Length: 365
Image 1 (cartoon, one colour):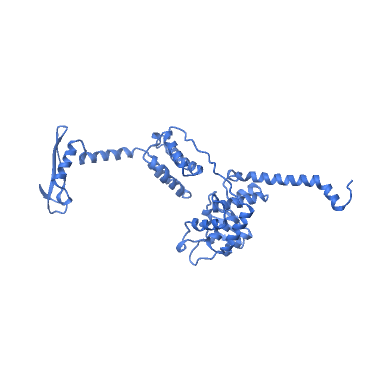
Image 2: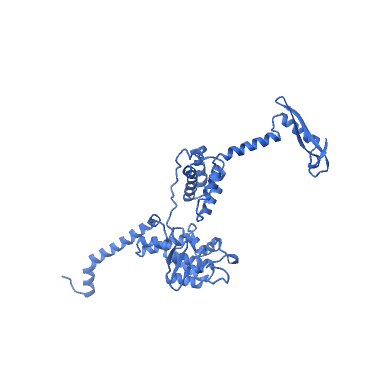
């Protein structure tokens, strides 16, 4: 059959005519210029007769599916809505957890349609390649999205309680005196290299990786000896006092002509990562494979404070912990410090007279 094509020029069009459920149906198969042939048209006609949907039926089904989905609050839809209510801080980490772990399994499901077995599969799959803490945080986000739907009265929530794994990898990393001495030697050997200065600042301040990388010169006061932490992970913005060692590290940092950042990345922007360069220094210092360089140095700083007799309240403030819960992980070090002091006191009491007699060479009566 001859007709005008999409470009307005004459073209051959192939039409299909067949009966389905006793009804005569006629539809267009396509134009010759689009690659349609008599053989292709016959194949389409046979498939229609055997039950394949027509173009009109397909459009109707798609519209019905969209209409049905518009009234369904799937995890994808809840997540998109939930993100708009979330503060910017920490949202990227949540996005990664959602995209990588939650969306593939639950994105198109409503909370009410999820079973405990579905969640068990996610947990077991993640535990093969991720730490218990990562699994915990992912399931916590999963639960949080469902609870958001309930709170906003958008949809029913999960029909069961999500069992959370134990966060048994909340370890307190530390270094032996020998390891710490060797690390400082390596950092000194690398002078003003950014990775070395970043590690030193983490060691002397306990700052988090994100806080160091976003640190700007306008937030540093070397004369008065403090850093202004804007919107830290632990909560409200605050001043962080600097030790002379930390001040010296910052004085060694070269200032970029156009960048605001203390440790700028390419073209003066915010540095995105430090892993490759810092891992190189970690390996050169011979630190344990499971030692997380910047996070571990934060633990070293905190442990040193506690072992030096600083009370947990001050440690909490220096680490900018929002609550005492995180700082309590160092309480056993405080106990050991107090126990050592008690032993020293007892030894002095019991051995005092004898020691005095030995020193004077006389008998104490």
